[in-house]
Length: 128
Image (cartoon, rainbow, N blue to C red; front, side, top):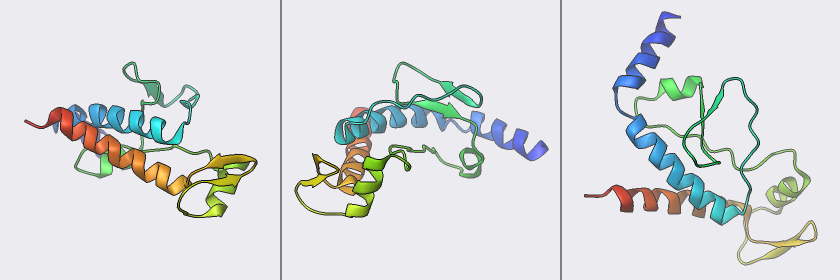
């Protein structure tokens, strides 16, 4: 328990939260645009809503404390959703395909594009 408290205190004092929240917000907004996914309905408990962005939540995860740098986690797709499973099974591809009766671009491309654009937007806003 002492290690958990120490890591929590270290994270509070290292200033990473000054990067994590705006980075998480930028990536979440870009990922929402690229995937078209709505915000997840996150139940209470160890999850806390922060700010006004419906995509950004705070969670008490061990990995948040393990890494000595700003850390964000992305949970874009629900793995047991039939449409998501079909898109994963389709693999990466160029252009658009009919998957489960709808036209989609590659799930992997949408995901990577959202993350990359979010990181770029964050640094464009924060660069001196």
